[in-house]
Image (spheres, one colour):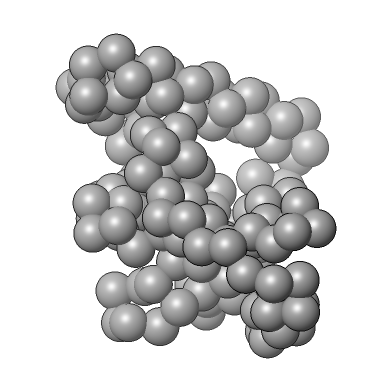
Length: 141
């Protein structure tokens, strides 16, 4: 995955898949088998845990009056992980190991859960003050 042209193709495929997820979920209230197969092909072992996090409504969109937004995902262990909307960064150990170090995953299950929850409009919403959002951001590992 170190090749930048391969990375940009993968990003394009990911974005197109997420558009398909959004369209399918809005029109039918579910994901088709074809979309699930494509997601499984691209995301492999992170897909099912990510879908499980979405099903459990563990994805929260945190916004402040300043317009800043972050997402928090309560992982399967109960630990909340904070993710930024402008990247695929996550504070979980799997991100550091599988995405950055080994580069055998495109994103961790938490960032995939966020992308899926956004596409399916299944994020919980939490409004906080600007100061509270700063605390959330500064506590990211």
